[in-house]
Image (cartoon, rainbow, N blue to C red; front, side):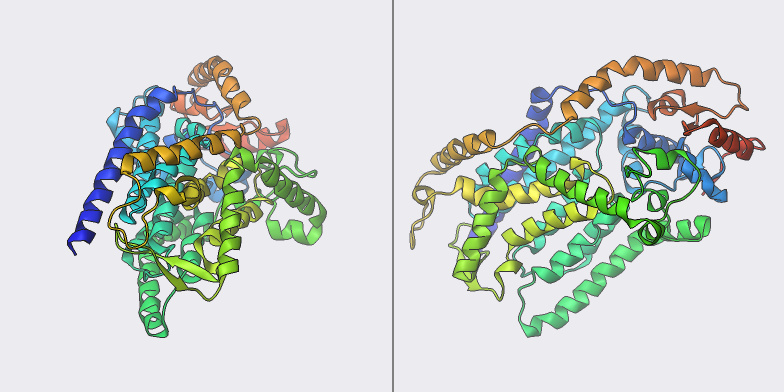
Length: 509
């Protein structure tokens, strides 16, 4: 008991130390980049501003497509194209800077650094709790080396907090011995409010990774029901709001556009700049070939760009671990901190952590292939992959505890040094920069002046004018709702006619 308590204290201390180190060193190693004027963060910030003012879930940037539904023909527009979780979280940095338009992106970056520090601290504490010092040191190397992390931090991507939630769920259930409960429902509910398309992953892991006796299954079922009730309690108010506003609790503008987007029929974002919804089932029924081409292109994209997300050594090592588990037919079970690892048989090697992590990454690539081809969507799995591959990078026979020995073969500092000596070159030699992201960062610098000019022009428009803009930054900077530029003048004229009776009406959703 005393040994277990000491292990928990050591894990907590190590996790806090790593989190603090990340908070201090990350801003020094990664200077802040300016936001792209088209960044989604501006949309979330505008919603947070309305929440802080007591207006409700309203948004200052509207897609032309959203005006296809009568309830959305108003500016500012009820939030119908983003989940509510991130705007609510952004109330914290909003309050910290007093709503200052120009300082708020920096405050959001500080929040993202804190989220990254929590990820680093939680993962480190989990390895120290298991008595695995080498793995604890090694896992930080592929995590910090992920080329997309600096962009996610600087540009306020929701994938980073989603990754923190998924890692928390993963570490609770990867060993297959824990029954779902209220905490799991809380984590899953928050994930559903942040990135709804990812909310299926935690329940899938609860079931797939479970390693229980028949007597435990009844208790597991009760725990699962409790977790789902907590999820419903968290998401229920938003679902009721959507049902009252739109008639559909799961309504989203994206559902009528995302599959059609970037196909030969609707190149780029053209589908969002017109007024005809394009539901996925209509496309699959009437013209499935463009969707099939887009899906195949998306699968090729994710396969080709994966080394820009994680060094290719990581999936190779994880695959080797999965095959080794298949060969042995065994699976590791956790032991008390500072104790030996116990080995217990598992019914299927496919249900071990390494193949499950890889399968989850592949499943997300398949999910996003017909929707959106951006590598950032897979960022949510990077901490889990980095954590699972850590023993392969940081544990070697001369650093591990000998059978029956009280102490490790090497002192802790030598184990950490050996882990870093191996992990750093392996990671750095097998990574590459993701395609297009550095160019986008350069564009963000050159586009700042244009966004400021557009915001100034927006401020100068008459109060009864319907403003059309090219960027999401202009409505945020001007503090005035606007419509994203339509594809043609006929669409613009229709929107003007719909908004003419009350162009500045605010609606409490």
